[in-house]
Image 1 (spheres, helix red, strand yellow):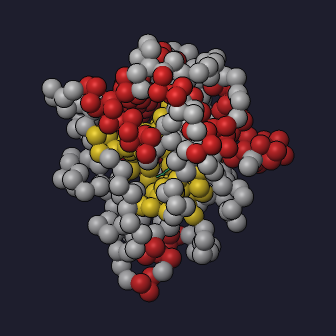
Image 2 (cartoon, protein in one colour):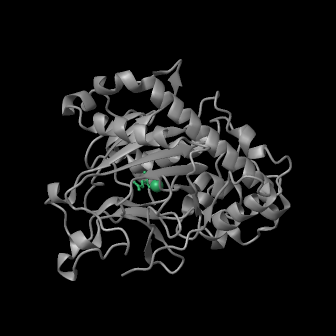
Length: 363
Ligand SMILES: O=C(O)CCC(=O)C(=O)O
Ligand SMILES: [Fe+2]
């Protein structure tokens, strides 16, 4: 059984805790793993709000196909993508991801600014509030990164992530059908292909018992990322998983690591003869149930120039681009603004939507 990744768990809202110490621990986790668990205590994000978002997600994906198709994803990266429409790792995958997704852009006055299935129309205000809370949590984390990296001024990143300016930030619902409903799966197929995220920070919400996320370790092996790592099993909700995206890695000369990850079918499904519960030790996964996850991709305002981060630690990180981002060539590219950086990445993963345009950008 592959060993689970030893990603640190940090409580950013601990009463009386030293902010500088928390900031340094966050930076250490981002440098070493590119991933960190944030303990869910209902302070930064109410647990009912997360649960409600999953309820809305179930309603959305249970909508009739034609309702979802009416909201098909557009070049602005908003809308519904059907089964196999996205291929996160086109070089390796035989077939597109075994998932459906729905990307929400901005909301205005509690209403979506894009077509949405009628089943979730009554929930727009809740979704708007959830998206806003996610963005605020990201800005809190970005402020802590500013402190931990001794960026001058420490709100350098936070300022670049103004919630009112146009940006690529997306709230995404994901639905992975039950393995029992996808008999066309072959050995080597994955639910979501290996990729790194494009933006600055990503929040990932998962449900207990719905494993499958794996990160690529520096040795090239895949390590499972448990939903409830040791010490959080009794918490009211699983911790929020946070990871660094390519843009923040690029911006910090590769000091903060953007780690490649994927969603695999459980070992139990692929090799049932090995017995039950072989995927992540404590987290048996049902092959009869769908898997749902919710992701918030936080991006700087489109117009943000990706100028060098004013931090001695970042500036001194000489070998970063060559070392920390091996296998992550986007981090080495010279791009001008956050908006341009995002466009380059989107073209590579939605080949159908962009026709041949994307192929030259894929790596
Ligand atoms: O569903 C998951 O657990 C991960 C999804 C993911 O990595 C992504 O959408 O970028
Ligand atoms: Fe991802």
